[in-house]
Every structure is written in C-alpha cells, then in structure tokens.
Amino acid sequence: MQILYLVLALFLLLNLGAGMWRVLRGPTAADRMLATQLFGTTAVAVLLLLAQAYGNPPLRDVALVFALLAAVTAVAFVRRAWPDQETGHDSE
Amino acid sequence: MEAVILLQWTFDTFLGLGLLWLAWRALACPDLFRAIVLFVAFGLLLAMAWVSLDAPDVALAEAAIGAGLTGALLLAALARLRSSETNVEVAGQPEKKGLKVRNPQWLPVVVLLPVAAGLGYVVLSLPPDAVGLSAQVAANLETGGVSNPVTAVLLNFRGYDTLLEMVVLLLALLGVWSLGGAALRREDAPGLVLDTLSRLLAPVLILVAGYLLWVGAHAPGGAFQAGSVLGAAGVLLLLAGWRLHAGLAALPLRLALVAGSGIFLAMAVFTLLMEGQLLKYPPAQAGILILVLETAATVSIGVTLAALFLGGRPPNKQDHR
Amino acid sequence: MILSDYLSAALLIAGAVFFLAGTLGLLRFPDVYTRLHALTKADNVGLGLMVVGLAVQAESWAAAGKLLLIWLLILLAGASVAHLVAGGALQRGILPWKR
Amino acid sequence: MSAAFLYALVGVGLFSLGLYALIVHAHLLRKILALNVMGNGVFLVLVALARRTGEARPDAVPHAMVITGIVVAVSATAFALTLMLKLSAATGRAELPDDRRE
Image (cartoon, rainbow over all chains, first blue to last red; front, side, top):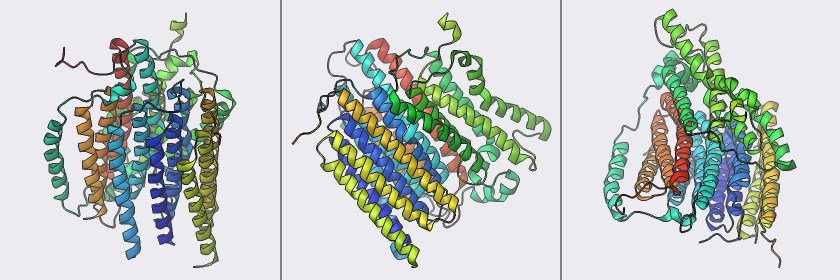
C-alpha cells in the first residue's frame, strides 16, 4: 500500500505542475488565483497521502491548517487586489 | 523497499525543481500580480518540502503563514500600491515597471556564480552524518516539561531566543504604527457569502489554534503555529469588513500585544530570582509554566499579525472626537 | 492485502482520476466560469473519494473524523471562493463564453 | 548524497536566485519578494542539514530556529511593505532613487 500512496502523491504533484500552466497563461487575474486554489486542494490530498505513507498522523494537522486557510488568499484577492477594470486579457 | 526509496527520490527531485522554477518565475515575470500568485504557490510547495524533510512543526508554521498571511499581505499591499501610483499619475504603465532592470545584468551573474558555487561546495563538503544537538535535546527532554522536542527547545532550552523574538514582532508592529494610522478605507458590504464564510470559519480557526497550542506539548504544534492560525482568523475577519470596536482599540489591544513579551519577561525575572538562572524552570512545574507562556505568546502573535495586516495604528476614540 | 485494502486502493485511484479531470478542465475550459466548475466539482469530489479511501485505513474514529472535517472545510472554502470569483467576474464585465 | 543534500542544494539555489533578483530589480515589491526567497533558501539549508541524523529524529534546534524565523520574516515583510507604500505615497513610485541618472 505504501507504494500506492507514494505513486498517487507523485501523480498529484505532477498534476500541480500542469496546473501551473494556467497561472502563467492567465488570461485574467481570476484565472491565476483559481489555479492557486487548485494548488491548495491538491496539496491537502498530497499531505493526507504522505501522512498515511509515512505513518505520521501529525501531518494531517498540516492538511487541516491548509484546508482552513485555503480561502484566505482568495478572499484577499477578491476584496482587495482585483482591479476594477478587467479586460479579459492582461497587458502582455 | 527499493521502489519506495526510488519514489521518494523522484518526489523530492520534482519538488526541489518545482521550488526553484517557481522562485525563478516569481522573480522574473513582468507582472507584479503574477509574481505574487507564483510566490504564494511557492509557499505551498515549500510546506510539502518541510513535510518531506520530516519537519512537521515547520510545515505547520509554513502552512499557516505561507498559505494565509503572506498572500493576503502582499495582495493588499499591491492594491494600495496601484491606487497610490495611479493617484500621482506616473507616466507609463505601473504594471510594466516591475520589469525595469538596471544594466548591465551580466555583472551580478558573474559575481554571483562563484558565490553560489562556493555555497554549494561548502554544503556538499559537510559530513553526511551529524547528530548536531539532537542528542543533548533528547537527553534533557525529561526535565523539559514537554515531550515535543521542538517545543522544548523553543520554550525551555532556548527560551531567551523566543523572548527576544516576541520583542522583534512587537518592534515590527511599532515600526508600522509609527508610520501613521491605518488608512480609512471604505470597505464594501461583504455580501451574504463572505459574511457566512467568515462567521463559519473564524470560530473553527480559533478552535484549531487552541488545539495546536494544546498538542504542541507532545506533538507538532505550539505557540507560533497557533498564533499564526489566530492571525489568519483576524485577517479573514478584517477582509470581511469587521473592525475592532473603538473602545477596545486603545488599552485592551495594547495589552494583548504586549502580553507575550510581558509575561515572558516577568517569567525571566522570576526564574532569575528563584533559580538563579534566566528562564530555568523547576522541572516539576515546567509543563504548566510553558503552557502559560505559550498561551500568552499565542494571543500576542495572533493579534500582532492581524494588526500588521491592517497596516497602521487603528483609530482611537480620541481620533473620532 | 485484505478487503479493506482493495476498497481503499480503488477509492484512492478514483479520487486521483477526478483530480486529473479537474486539472484537465482548468487547462482546457474556455473561460473563468467554466473553469470554476473544474475546480469546485472535480477536485472536491476527488478529495472526497481520497478522504473516504484513507478513512477506511484510519487508526481510530477520531482520525476518520478529522479527515472528514478537512474535506468539509475544503468544500466550504471552494464553494465560497467560486461564488465570490464568479460574482466579481460578472461585475467586472467578463462575458461568459458562447459557442 | 542523501535527500538532505538535495534540499540543501535547492536552498543554496534559492538564496542565489533571490540575491540576483535583489540586485537586478528596481521595484521595491520585487526586492521584498527576493528577500523572502533568500530567507526561505536559508531555512531550507538549515532544515535539510538537521535531517542528517540518519534514522533518528531530526535535530530539533534548527527546526525551532526556522519556526521563529518564519514568523519574524512575515512581520519584517509587513513592515517593509508599509515602508514601500509610504515611499510610493510620497514620491509616486515604489523604487529607490537612481542616483546615476539624476
């Protein structure tokens, strides 16, 4: 089972790498922010898998903190940093 | 077993390359907003690196700060920067200014390559096996009052470090406050969704902060992690439009801010008088003394971080008159 | 391998498939609104399946409860953020994609 | 070479990248990001070297130092950001004056 956990963790890590493309590409600021939201959810899954693979239950607390704070950065973006005019395409 | 080790190596390699790549993109891409988003992603990946290095205490702190506070701080600063730059009507696009670099660029590369190579050489020349101070920590853990070695180091063996660290936090806040009051920005109504979210999450955040504080005695967790989670709760509430009641903004707020360093200092003086040594607790009472210190430190760290996010002295009653 | 191991493995792999679907959606969908679906549906189901798969293996009921709590928190955060982002995008005049 | 040294080398790489960006970029927000990357590189070296205990528990002292370091770094970042905003409000640009041109 340990091998399965690690394989899946690695798979999710590669998934994250693919998601990075959206952060780089955009086109809107919201797209970039959404991609980091995906990062949060995937990171939680990776941490839970690693907790099981290494038999290290405290890692679940790290995942718990991630889950709790997943919304904070996105809320900061929506409330503060989202420019009023969004043309749909960033000035490249 | 071979397969497990191979998988761990692959995971570590991808993670390391990902960290370097994200850092490079965050520092090199032309748009400042994109740089901040990439930096937040970098923080998330870093938390996984701490887990991989068997440092769950560090991972907890990074998760709370990297995922919550740093991103919020940077994004809020960027928003205020944009409004101030457009107010003054600077020529040229503010977005593009992040790209402007000083020439010649090859000079720093030439200077820094040997520095990087030298640092790498020094790191690789270190002995592959070194116990460091872990043997001493393990030997003294029985008298430490807590069974989590990291908490024992932070609050007992090197308690004076933590005392001064609380003072550093306070100094950073004093620096921010000395630059003026908080900008009185008109916050939009949070709306039903954000209001509900903050009402649901804030109590859970405070509960988890208490949980981390409690388990810190025997498992990963402790005052810094709990304080960071508490600070994130404050940031979430501030973003939802909540403000400290003016009556609480004067003395009670300041008391909460200095509680950590104040009680720490009192404890230092007390132990100096009783035991003849700075922050040397009697082993029988060490556990309870550490819990008291950690509780005060958690409150102070949380309130300080939230106040730092507000970015200025909160308006007093006197200011309203 | 006992029965619960097979069950857990099946759930974990199913979860990974949903994560893959979410990432594909994030990369391939044409606008913000459709990409929101990929994140809030596929990924949350993926995480849910993984949580159930791991909860089968959990050492105690408390541990299983903590796993469930983590999933609920992610659901709450995902749903709220999706709503906030979609509302903000509409307000800023980003047009939904039409064929 | 063990995984500890892999991460230590990544830490050195991050430090060098951050230092380069700190020198090259003029915008202060970018400089603050660069300082943070440098700090995280140092943390990574410290924690990676604490892992050299073999099968035993890693050394707790560097872990404790890094935890305090993370919290200090975020408060220093907040202070730096406030200073940057103050400068930008006063001069209209978040960059240090370039004394070669004036």
